[in-house]
Image (tube, rainbow, N blue to C red; front, side, top):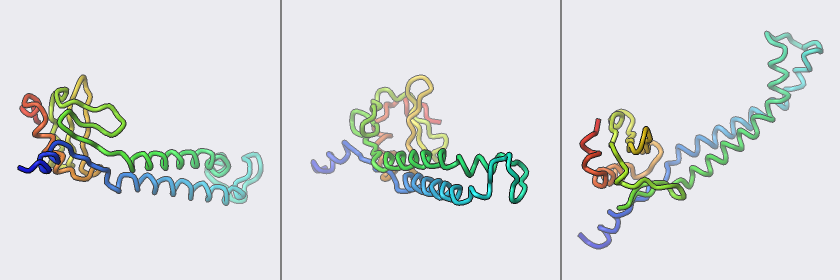
Length: 166
């Protein structure tokens, strides 16, 4: 084996797939569109004490949604944009010491108690159980280079954790 190949085996970087963070931006766009629709449509829904241009089953719902909905939807859209930007740069790094996301606490391989593969065949999700009821999730939908990562995890997880696979 060359030094370059062995160096690659010592560290795997898995950037996020585009699906995960693009969905957040889609939700943000839908919420902004709903806010604009509420602002443009609020003239049809006067205060509940005034007569309605067309009666509805609940005179308060249309008023509250169209007059105060944007105050909820716009900050919620901002939160989705924030989460999307954060997920865009959420890189998973696995090396000889452990596994974890950049700028977050890492999970040491020695702390892994069990390798849970109960939903791996159906959903391509692998859980690394550690501590009391704590699990580290590895999802093929969210991570690029997932097959390489699974092979790397299987070689670095302690033998006692591999024996407890489901």
